[in-house]
Length: 244
Image (cartoon, helix red, strand yellow):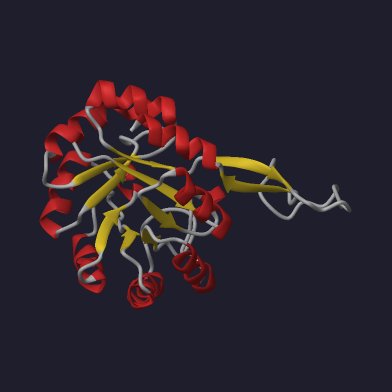
């Protein structure tokens, strides 16, 4: 059975570490700490130059839900076309309706924008109303991959749903298991579900090189200061690769 290890990265340094650790494919994004948003153009260009493996680009204009305004949806369309021109191998996107169902009309338009690129339906799938119905819709739309934790915060909590999804999908669409993935999770999932495709960040917290620190000022997320940096750990990717 063919295996795939995809690593989600939001910096050039993380991308290089992931490739060196044995990743098959990268999902390029920004702001991984809030679940990821669309990356910058210069970031993508540098990763494209530094890495010779497949690059999928997350197209997500903001943090939060997947019910987009007309202006946000236009941004998504334009970004897909732009990254397609810049040499992306695939895009990662998803739109829902207010009732929790997949927005088929908009997804058809995005699939057309992507052209021949690989298309992954991201974890909007994990907050949709009915995952089994949505899987069938994704197949019908010509989507290649569904990234999912089994409608749970982490994949180990969604393992029973993931078992059903993998069985339902068969060879028609790739089920890419994400959410809390590491080497041990991969080992347990392979034995319990037969899953062969996994998505992880392998991130570790790096201490800032700043020697002068204004500790009383916080401009970011509560509990995560300006002097901590998330970066992919090459050894974590190597351990996952060995298990696969």
